[in-house]
Length: 349
DNA sequence: AAGGCGGGGCG
DNA sequence: CGCCCAGCCTT
Image 1 (cartoon, chains in turn yellow, orange, brown):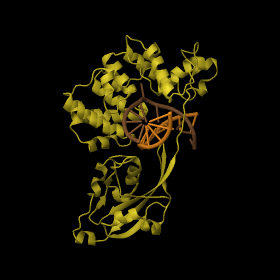
Image 2 (cartoon, rainbow, N blue to C red):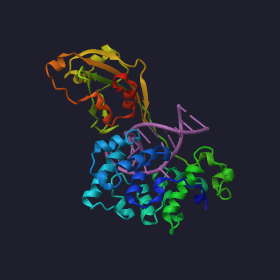
Image 3 (cartoon, rainbow, N blue to C red):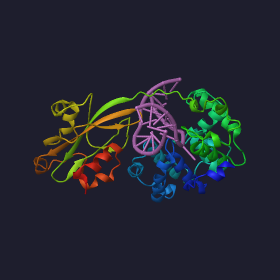
Image 4 (spheres, helix red, strand yellow):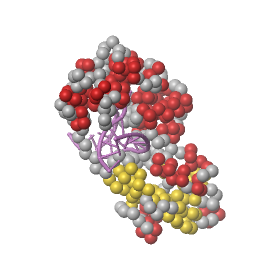
């Protein structure tokens, strides 16, 4: 069989422990194996069992998750670990249907855990499976339409080997990831070349079909990097809906367009931010905006260094959310902020 | 049914 | 540059 010859030796392939499988599957949602692998190793070391994961803090989990993206996965991971540890005596649900009720666990993840850990016959349908099935069977139904999702799930469910469902699922995904690749698949040496409809019809490059409707929004961020003479700065946690929920960042002034210093000081949010401080000087750190690209937003970002006058500490004013500069690296921050911290000499300790 | 949610790697 | 990645949740 193709899988046995080509499978990669991945750490979660040597276990049926639902905790480890669950952790790996959550991490690999919309994430390449190569990107998720180091995170998986670090998580397993820090949290060997669900007990350690459930009894730590959300901040610690987010810090370890930093850079992997889709941070709701980390928050749901923590919520689910707590639920399982506290409400279920640390015992995972042991079938597909119950797994589906867990936060952050959808059809794919529930099928993966159920098939791998409990030998339940549930077919996974991830990006790899969509690609392989759409090509081999020549299916043009958009994979992200309601009809497509149903059609591919039932087809996969027909094909799955009931004796080794977990192995079957991992094999078809591995085949999609390693052989039936999105670009330039090696159809010449493919084990399905005799029956692949897409190959016969010369449609490999056009399958799978996907409806796409991504509008990219431009946003303009101005981060106010506060520096007090005591060697402290200010970080705030993002608590609102939207990107980077629960992560930390410098006080943010969002504007409708790029602004200069005069314009920035007229912005309401800037005045709210600076109200508690006595800003002595405000210096633009990067003339050219850093463009941080998310899949759905482009963030044009400038950092402003705000040095506080001595009065702040003489008066003993307590500054909200202030932290020693040496502790900045303890906080979970977006990559955009992490890059700045790494670049800014004051933070290099 | 549609939109929001990260970051990185590849051609 | 655009595309896609072991998807899920909210509206």
